Image (cartoon, rainbow, N blue to C red; front, top):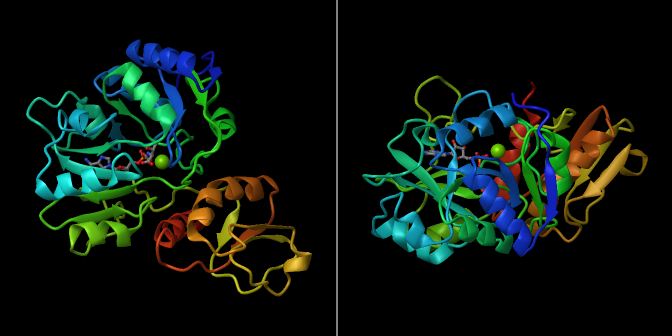
Length: 329
Ligand code: TXA
Ligand code: MG
């Protein structure tokens, strides 16, 4: 792992976008905001820079990364879009949707970034700071979430700094992100697959597809067979503290992650209480999820009790991340 790197932190703006583009072109690592979570970017065509992403994050395996580009035209230089993939791209880009499509013949993305697969995951982020950096740089930027591997994804520049300062070259601070969970990943295969629930709801995608999305039969990385979304480690997004799901009461040495207006027995005596959305708005809950997990984790309660969250809209992504956080490690 490369440590002792001088990490520059710049407020978002034209100067930061230029600095980010220069750092990327020189093979450096730049953390920047997207509307979903902060990403840790490198030049997608530079295998050494891509390798530095894995070592900076302490990522255990060369799981494939998402290539970020400024628009659909740039996306079509690296991936092949059939009619269905085009329909999704046109409906939801820029936005919190990643499409896995076959690589183009001369796809410039480094093999390391696609883990040697003949497909590539592509996303056009909507965040103006991400857009400015991608346009200033001019090429594809691969970017996983900007956290130490296995940690909760960063929704503030301060989260990136606490995980990665001294390991990366630049952090562009664009304030808190809007969506708060990672992009939804759709595999544009013969049967379209929901590889990862995320910031765009299944319902909205299915409405455009006119078909329902299948989930991969096996949990994406349970075995050692070639997984469909190889980065979806069963234990991921994990705080240090034990997470207890579907709580119907709370003990005095537990913290409570609440949702909606209901109150649980024991709530007044709990070690800490944060409510993802008192109005039971799932979009607001998604935006608050990772930050609140970090805050409660820092208080070191015996456990974080989490109230049940409906499995609809962004609730599917929230429950997916919470189930992963609850896997014992
Ligand atoms: O919102 C997001 O998607 C954020 C921001 C920074 O854009 N990025 C992100 O990247 O969440 P990461 O590396 O944490 O997740 C990438 C996921 C992994 O689960 C990986 O397995 C999957 O994308 N993936 C990448 N390439 C793939 C491919 N060719 N086929 C299937 N899955 C792929
Ligand atoms: Mg991640």
